[in-house]
Image (cartoon, rainbow, N blue to C red):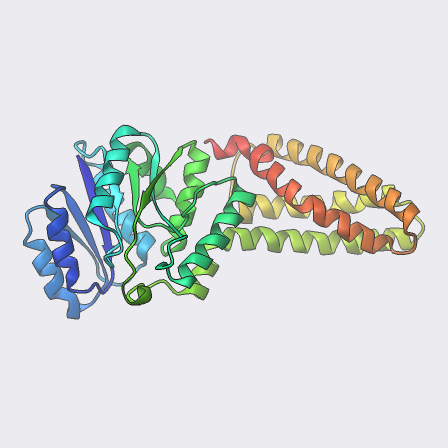
Length: 342
C-alpha cells in the first residue's frame, strides 16, 4: 500500500474535491492540518468524513517540514505501507501525475521518486523558474545532487528511507532540500518522473516566501561560505604579516594555512556538516588536504609572482578563490565521506 501525504496550511475549499478524486486511486490518505486555525475547521471536518482519509493536527503552525515528519512518523509504524507520496495541498499536482509517481515507486522501490516539473513551459511563473534554476545549479556544484527540479513537492519515498527523513533537520521549506542531501548521504538514488504542474493565478496560493524561505533552504551553503570567508580572512591576515616580516612565500603559506585550518576544520565539522565521531580519521584526511592545497597555492603564487611582481597578496586571492570549490568537493566526498554513510 502507498500512502498519500498532504501537508495543509490554510487550504482552499477545493482541497476536498481534490482529495475525493485521489480517493478513487488511493485507499490511504493522510492530511496534516498544520495549525490552520478555526476558520478552516469545516474543510478538515469534510475531509475527515471520507473513509480513506486520516487527519493529523498541529495546534499551531510548525511548517511544511514538520508536517511531513509528523505524517512520516504515523506511516513508519504501519507494516502495510510500502512507501509514501507527498503531495502539495494547493492543487498544483494532477491526479494522473501522482499515479505516475506511485507506479515509478513500485518499479523502483528503493529510490526517491521526484515528480519533476518541465520548466521550459511558459506557464511556469518566473519566480519558480528562477528559484529552481539557482537551486539546481548550486546543488549540482556543491553537493553533487543532479535533479532537474529540486523544489518539487511531489515525491515518492520508500518505507526504507522514512526513518532518515524523520531525522532530517528543518521544519519549513528548507526541509525538502535537506531531504535531498539526506538521500545523497544514505546512498538513495533519484528517479525522475516528468509531470505537468498547474499554476493557478500565478501560484498566488503558495505559502512560499522567496526571500525568507530561500535563506532557510540555502542555510547550509551560507554556513559553509561564512566559515570559509572567516578562515580566508584569518589566513590572509597571517600570510600578509609573515611576508611583511621577511618569510618566504612558501613558508608563509604553510604556516598561515596551518593556523587557519584548525579553525576551519572545527567550524566545518560542528557548524556546517554537523558531524560527530571519526575525529582522528577526518582530521588526518583534512591535514592531507591542507598540505596538498597549500602546496598548490604556494607554488602557483610563487610562479605568478615571478611573472607579475609586487601584487603577491592579490595573486594569492585569485589562486585560492580557484581552489575554493575544489576544497569543498574534497571535504564533502572524502574528508567527511565515512560519516555521511553512517
